[in-house]
Length: 245
Image 1 (tube, one colour):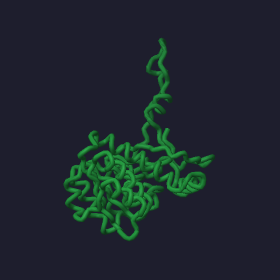
Image 2 (cartoon, rainbow, N blue to C red):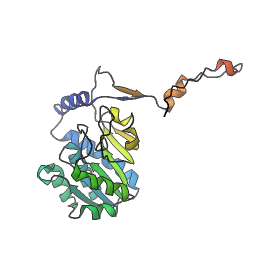
Image 3 (cartoon, rainbow, N blue to C red):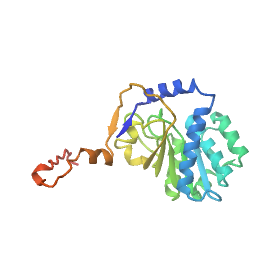
Image 4 (cartoon, rainbow, N blue to C red):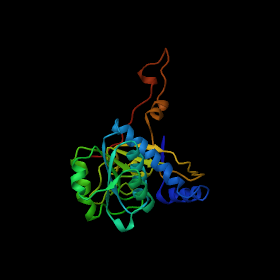
């Protein structure tokens, strides 16, 4: 069973955890998990070309720190900054120290990328991509590179699963701490690709999940187990609830 929690529940749990950890430790946990997934998707990290699409929020910081880890393993990492004045300073410094760079020709580096990390917006994003991000999302999609979203594809809404305009279409989404509703329900579910959960140690306590999604094992556990004398009338009935589309 995958249980998904809304933005406010997740943020409350994150604040409580950050209060108990050294400054920046939670972001480093997220970035480490993100880098591991990216490395697995690349297969060969050394010599690969990675492009980070970096927004002004914490997702941009996650992308930069993950990019620094990949750069230290020999990847050529370029960061496209959507708002250079509000970029995560520590993440950018870490990337540069590891040998990464800020891209001067965003569309050029995207056309040559092996993997693109979408760190444009986070779980608080509303209303689709802003105009400046639209050509970058399209270029990432058209490049043939593997696109990895940080926490949630930019342009989809975490709580409702709505897509209001242009959106990043990811091959994989690395989400942190817990699943968010938009990762499990349509139409956003069509944009997230394979979902990988990175545990952060969040304590969700008695919070009620907003969405629960059955997995293969859950469905299998619900099916009657046939015995030696079972026939088709003893093995349950399948019901289908469907719309007209």
